[in-house]
Length: 125
Image (tube, rainbow, N blue to C red; front, side, top):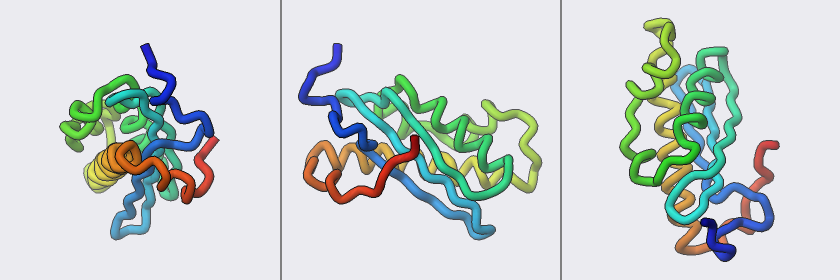
């Protein structure tokens, strides 16, 4: 059951994580939380289809998981989910996991200081 004080009424993400690779690919993950779990995750990418696949896998892996479970995810978990990623693109899994971890850590910080959410940019729809 969701506690009413735990729900974000404005619809803005509770946590946002962004990472950019040396090749210029960007993964941005947004998480919405309830208690200490992620209930929704969305992503934005700038990069190739491999970047898109990794970000989508990270978002899917996050939904319904506790913060601790998410912070324990490793790039190998992304690679397992998107079998067939070319050898030269495996760094994208690192990028996606780093963005996901950053989003969860941001959500944890924002739960401690909820006023910071007001200064956010709009989230993806």
